[in-house]
Image (cartoon, rainbow, N blue to C red; front, side, top):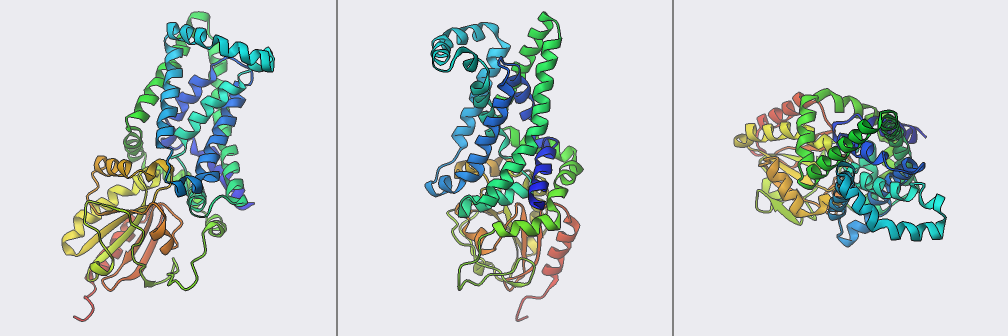
Length: 412
């Protein structure tokens, strides 16, 4: 019950995170359509798509090697077209004429009132919004998504996702109702102008998502508001919540040498890596004698975006002293499973340290990891000496690097 409550609160608060900024104009624009149940349809479509893609079908998609990248781009195109119909009245009339036979058939089958209540059209739009929203999750949903991708959906995972969606629906409904009421209250000419403005905003968001500019824009906004996301996600990192989330993590396979996350021990070898970026293939055995930071991340994770400047700085500052960063990219969302997308993200973010692509969560499971981002500091003899999860404590992490570099190499 603690996790469900915190998941609900996290869903409510996520709307304040910079990564949800593109969602606001989409909700405003889609809410001005006709039909008394259109807003209900938007929320229904949003919830079903978000839970389905991130939890219920996550392991199936992963096993089949499928991603929602093209589906998400298709959603952006759909939302952009809807925006164009709001912004350009001739296009709206043309679409209405083309959809006339479809609407007539729906009215004949369902009854005119049911066909025009906006539930179905709202659900289609809401599904698109759910795909755009999906990358913006905090520690609670990140743990749920990781577990679902590895072991499949569980009742607890689905329950947490439903609680999160219920919380997220609160601000979305408020935004949608405000947009609808505002456009209804203004005079005729001004109302048309507001519809066009909402439509233009939807088109802009569509272009931003299609061109991949949403992630770097969110990173810049987060950099300008460094304390906001940390404060928003702090509630999700409550120790009681994180302890309860441990039940989602798969148990270690019998006979494997598992290192407890909080204790010292031999660092598990990198395994299941299908691609390397910025380097030839590496192993921890080949890096003995160096201090290694094994850094779990994924390019769409807002927390990972926040910590990335610090990781890049550590790599640049201490590389010539025997320090190596191995960025293990374990995908959180399905479009992050496309190696081409990972390569593009690495290039755009100017990441120069070695990146290992871990699409099947093999290295993730070897470390029994549950978090994005996560940091495992490995000394020159291959033993984990410090771990840190999430944002913050950058000075402490850098101090660990300096201390490990100062230790003598074994045998000297």
